[in-house]
Length: 133
Ligand SMILES: [Cu+2]
Image 1: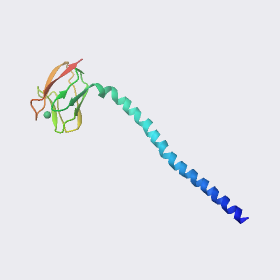
Image 2: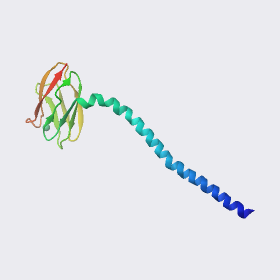
Image 3: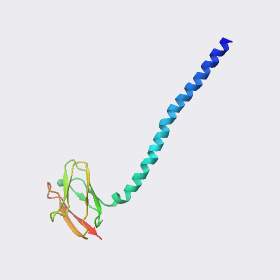
Image 4: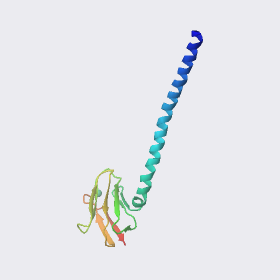
């Protein structure tokens, strides 16, 4: 009797162990799937604003959108390994500094017009922000 019961018990324990291992493997997969679906929400909400209105600085040169809406939030992305600024030629309209590899933003003027700007440390860097209503 005891000889029969002992292998039966150990088989039962092996099954329980196998189930525990399976659960351990499955649980992280479930929580990872949950994280992914949670991340898509904020992403989609951010895209419409940021996609269009971005000034990219690369190799000491501004890449400016053809125009930006009045009062828009303008993202400035610096892909260089030195810091730059986006500074309106007419002082006080806008002036932001952006470190190497960093990103910042400023608010475009409310008045539709063409706003020439430059980089303070590199005066040869110039471009124009066209603001439309
Ligand atoms: Cu610069």
